Picture (cartoon, rainbow, N blue to C red):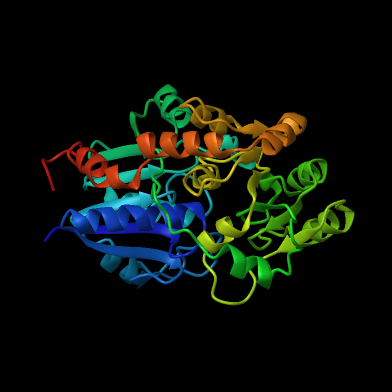
Length: 344
């Protein structure tokens, strides 16, 4: 049985990179691959000290070598963003001349703080995969050929426990709850999302924790918000599906996302979406989704008043046609066939 090693800064959590890596791993398992996860942080098969984001510990070279001892290595963003240059150099050196797929969720020039960072490394035996067309084009401009593979989603996710979560949240009868199922970071547009919720008379439910020193800013945003604010998942062992079920709409305040899984999850969970149209959202929306921007809150209110059954049905159908998790194994098989040296 051929082995595949996924390597990243952190895996096994709820961030987009970890979630998509798990989907790829499950798909490859169905294709007959023995899957291993390697990271500096998270519940993984091989935990490597020094491999995490801004990890200042010395790199455990022996653990890294053991983790990357596989027929195919798939690098998840570790060679895309310069979040740990020493770890990236070590991984890149070990993969020279070997079969590898570099799965780019973000690219350095797409983040203001990394504008002057170099392009991802390249090798004749590597295949680059990007999660949006913009990144494919930008890599091409820099001499790197990449294949497009959008993130994939279960077209029929679990229904979720609406009543149970709303009771746990002490939601009032008829209270409109807008869910932003993201972490709290500067680029997630938390304040803009709260302001949009105020305009449509909704409570703002931010599911994730503050990261990267955003704690004080989050406290300020909450204190200044003119709408009720709900933070985190209530106790009771609820899942992300329960959170979508308990919400009445999804709000997405991000100014930038490499993809932005909640916009597709809103479609598969049949919830209307109100968003700040970050660049990749416009690319995704062109497939036929009906979404509303923060500058369209009046029109969105009217749509809610007139009913959204046809809207959410259309969005679910578009998601199933273009972004279905059921198609992921065959799409990955086609990408693996591109790796030099013949099928693995």
